[in-house]
Image 1 (spheres, one colour):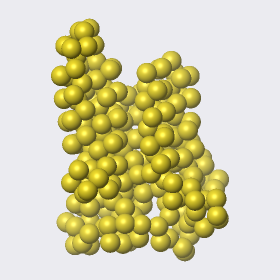
Image 2: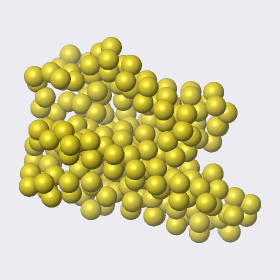
Image 3: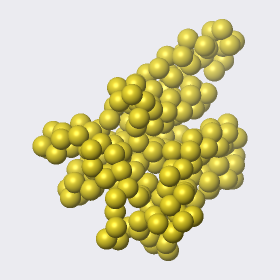
Image 4: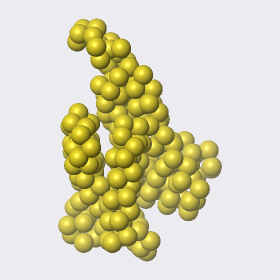
Length: 212
């Protein structure tokens, strides 16, 4: 177990976990699924993103659900595999999978906004934190009908949930991921502040949403 080794002994495991999880996270399921279904390049519609929200703009809810599930699964899988080498390795894998989704090497480092993959890594690291994220997202979405705002609020809440659960290291990871997630949502934040962000189920839908 690398957790019990010195830094030089653990480093190869950490690097391997980071590389593997990054490559797993960088699989662009939204793009692959829509192409296989005959919709071409999903990056040429809506927001140009590869996430669930933009896949939904094809009009195929089943494709959006499949994208959501697979983007979550790759985060969970990366963490669960890394757990075999201890919690430190799992945390590194979680960050690797998230970064891989947001900045995939195959797509010129232009990926999704990370919401689905973040949920997946949380479910793998601490089930309660993942479920709390989903619950907070749902509550904010029901109250405001803003998908992006729901993701932003849930991501801010995650570090506090992990702190409450006594997971200090995971809390630090959640802070880093929240910063990255907010950066990926900077255009959504601008639209929220200007009142032009599209709502869930609204008629105007040309680039809003969380685009996981």
